[in-house]
Image 1 (cartoon, rainbow, N blue to C red):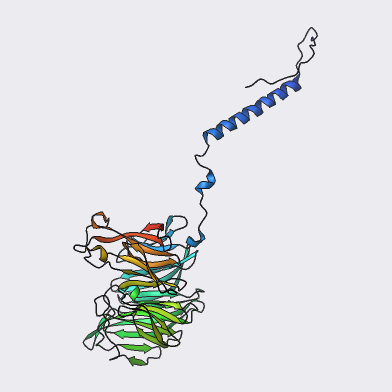
Image 2 (image 1 turned 45 degrees about the vertical axis):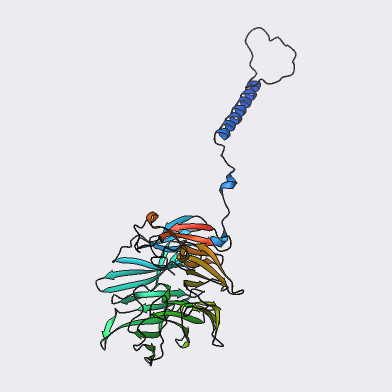
Length: 434
């Protein structure tokens, strides 16, 4: 310890006899020594524990544009990915194949999600629509349906105020009627506030598509919650298809259908616009329909992208010679995203998957990504896409499609449509829901 500098003092000889002690001076010196030791120790501690970087540089501000969580299914359970935090949360843990399965999850806001929980017992399937509070970790059963081993709740959508939910329900397994296998779909709306379930329409058909529905059979509220848009994938248009309203009145669609060749199939894709009392206001042939605003919808029809005005009932061609799929409308209704290429067995780079965005104001289409598939919107500047990898690098195993160069990887990217860069990514083991 450095010596303290002191001014000279006059020498005073102590008296002979007992040595005198200046306790006040000794106490002061001891206190000074203690203070110096404390300061030196603190300095050494700070030097040894000095962070390699300024603390503030490791704490990035939360991007409020990425604040809404993304829900997905993994190992038959519901998970959440938080883009702003780059972290995961597992919401359910009891899911098991063919016994208790979770599906169709979606984020309603920053603190609430919903999903479908299905209990499978022998030939019946009981499914409930669950609303889950992320903050309090509390599930709430909103709506429950039991089916005879059908698809049960196929699609649903919440109103903006979350006071009602519209749904598509298949109550029974396809059954034979008049020597024809028929399937039934029920379009309904559930008033959460008044605990009232209303059947809007039944649709009977020889067949509803082939297996997986994806987003080709779906239901969506209009932006102002005054109407419902229903996408239907049907088959065998030469057979009789019936609509049955809540009063039991039947209207037949025999001879009114025409076949559309969509992606090489003979499936019939139809878009219906309902009011909230179940009256069909508009019927158009097309697929991947979505709301552009409260009075206009966009969809694909016979290799053309189309905009339809509900008031004037006029179609406007947005893009001709369209050979895309997975068409979805941005949250602000100003853009469309879609995919081209990516067909089974594609070995020519020109046929590989490409992701495009169409601006509805300029009607200009721009390629935003290569080797990405199944685009859907996260926000108006970000789309969610699956990554594609070379088959030998694919962690899901060997190529299932013969001679296909690239195959689906279950890594989902948050892709910025302006910078064309990855903003975030996460992994699942399932096809991403709506």
